Length: 229
Image (cartoon, rainbow, N blue to C red):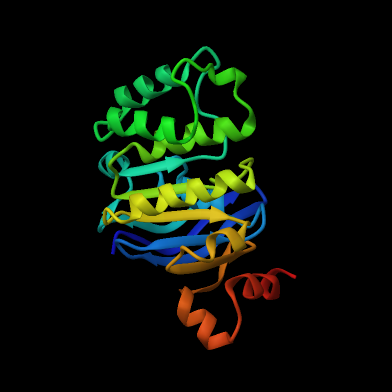
């Protein structure tokens, strides 16, 4: 098991963002964290990335507490922009290379080219879609064991989404584990191994995607509508 959550809770004053989540993430699989905005997906990812401390419960990475060592092996892409305005695309790569030992500069160049970005492009002039592509390229250029992508398809047009998904799948073939949060269920259904439905900070349903489809006689999209309608 690469990531284990046991009765995980995160409270902010009078709001409970994560409410007793227990979840096992297995190595080498693609997981979708599904649910509308505000359901607790982002908070759960931030706890796993070591950016937020849980109020109670435990979370471990390969049996050890989340900390310095797990951060070296987990690549997390947040929904917020994380590059400075003065940076060019090339600067962004160097910035990542300084922070992460597993960053592959050659791979970054290939991904930037694939995303149709230029190394001299300024981060502050990028559209929301291009900025999203930059974040994806920087994150996937790391040779991590676990990739956590928070809403990676947000702001990306329909044609470019396919390119993003193909790129994610190529990373998955390298025996990495991938956790993707999204409300764009139809885009992810064809690539995921497991679906985790989060509702009001709790796991409403979790299982192998094919088993869920066969067992319920419905697509993941239809199950999503059933849970959140």
